[in-house]
Image 1 (cartoon, rainbow, N blue to C red):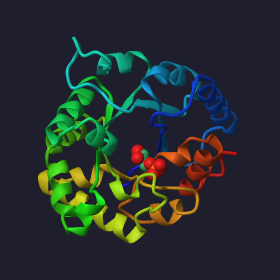
Image 2: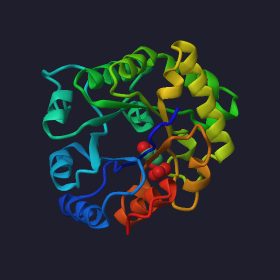
Image 3: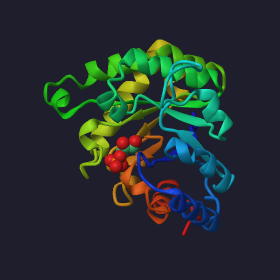
Length: 258
Ligand code: 13P
């Protein structure tokens, strides 16, 4: 099965208004890649509307987090409907920084992913083990629990045609400069795909599984060369548009970009 690659940039809590505008200009100037790829940017919520308006139409914009409830007294949080209203079409659920700093459990992540999907957004569910868990040989147990909690949502996303997306982001590789080797990443992706296929025939074959964790222009080609790696969720190397465009170009074999 052919799965369209995804190259996504998670800006986390970085960039100001002027940076977002300049980024959009750089993307527009580069023009669309001449290879099939979904390009998605995840700004902070205050700039979702700006990014959705300013970015060229061959890109999409997504939220870094969505509240699990539809609306109500949740000071500081953002509802899925508001994210859609701001012009976004994707949303992350369960990024490790949300799990770590906001205590999000597997169940919380599943509720968020369900709300995301219900609002018509494409959910990108993030999973990944810590270094301690990997050293204790608990990687598959941890990933199975994280993925297990969202299997129903991923199956529903698949059935609804919106497409299910999983991002494998080992915590030890995030922001450390220490990317997982293509062998490690491919082996985990293969495991996740098998688990998805085990839940529902074909779900693993249609689900796009991204790798995230210190992806850059130097390592992206070796990683995406692996059959089970369908693209990237990029943090630091997505903050500069020329770096992000270079990764798009190298990963897709596209001639576009600056
Ligand atoms: P880095 O690319 O900075 O390691 O971040 C990865 C990440 O957490 C993307 O969501």
